[in-house]
Image: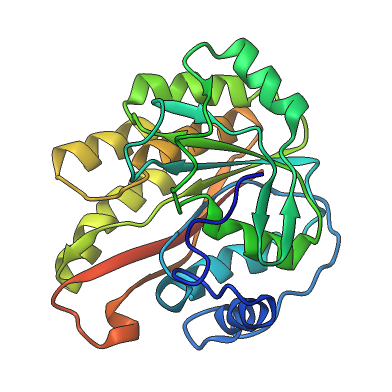
Length: 274
């Protein structure tokens, strides 16, 4: 079992405190302003972009996405892709261990994971890449809160070139009734004004369903979006799975929490819908 690496750091290690902090993200004035209400409607959201900072910083932006997901029927499986901040493990790594959080165990969809490993040769089974990485882990308590039990496939991106992302996206398109999540923060440690300007250019391409333009903007303008590869793969896979429109649910920065706008980290919550 994969043990949590950032419980007690990015989010509380105590189950009750963790539930309260998840709820605070939903209730926050910068978030949805209400707890999620499940309606069980048919799924429209195929993919989503969700931040992965500490909950006190990016909880409202994450909650905006999970509030939207909670309205819809739970998918059969989901894929969570995040950047590899640690440098451990292989370049594109799938985990097959069950993951544990303070809210309980989350099983991996082994059938789906094995299918991806079979058809996508650049993916490898490697637990080391996931052992200390936070970008996927921090999504699980929110998902446990809205769904209860679920299964997922974790993919860590140590390489984020467009060709690799498109190869992964093509493989994801074979999954049935899947939700694809890209875990990423946006501009890091620039002024609020600079972050909004740069991220606005990147988000413009995502709203236009243009993953290649998005990647050109990231590299050409030096936009420090840490999970640009997972985002590009998520968008490309979502289009293959029937998504036709994109929505920006919430954009914010750490400056809105801390009151310091000179060096912010930015967060965006987005969904790709049928």
